[in-house]
Amino acid sequence: MSDIFREVDEDIRQEKYRRLWDRLGPWVIAAAVLIVVGTGGYRGWLYWQENQSQQAGDAFFEAVRLSESGDVAQAEQMFAELSDATGGYPALAKLRAATDMVREERTTEALAEFDALSRDSSVDSTLRDIASLRAAYVAVDSEDYAGVADRVEGLTGEDGPFRAAAREILAVAAWKAGDVDTARSWIAALEDDPATPTGVARRVGILSQVIDAAFGAADDSDGAAQ
Image (cartoon, rainbow, N blue to C red; front, side, top):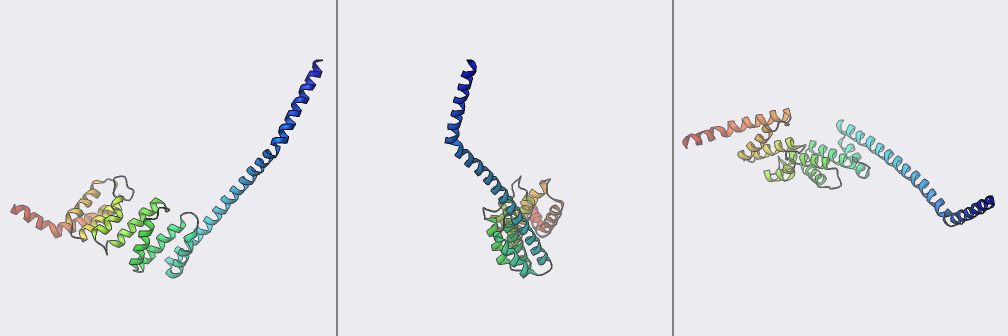
């Protein structure tokens, strides 16, 4: 008798499963298909991205090669064609193209490119900081101290990775503007920072000697008179 009850229970369970499958089976199949298609599509997209990035990298380094060999016009065209490339190559291309403009003494164009890149929030922050520094190096020959400071004073913080370069260019800009006290304060900040690179320390040391030679005697005589 117990066998009969087990068979009945089994038939009931199978009937429930069949009805459940009839109701939900198509959705289960659809979900499985979507998972397979989605996974394949994602992997295909990753492959496409990798392929596009590789092509952009090859084009960038070819443009750099052309620039180094003196074919700046062709290099500039190739850099411009990377404006829609994937990854960070559009920003790198703009940065390098602006650098070539400086070499060709197209400083107004270069400064505009560097400034635009430094303010582009879609660009990696490190590249924006580099663009700010490059703009400041160009501006130091054509703008006042405030113009240089607007670009790089924000990079001079104690934890800033580019603080040494920013402080150096500010010291030079202040000296060129005749603001000896400000120049000396930036030099002191560099001298007091143990992380200041040797090359930077050597250059600002020379600048400090130049300032002392030009203004030190006057400062000493004022002190003696008092």
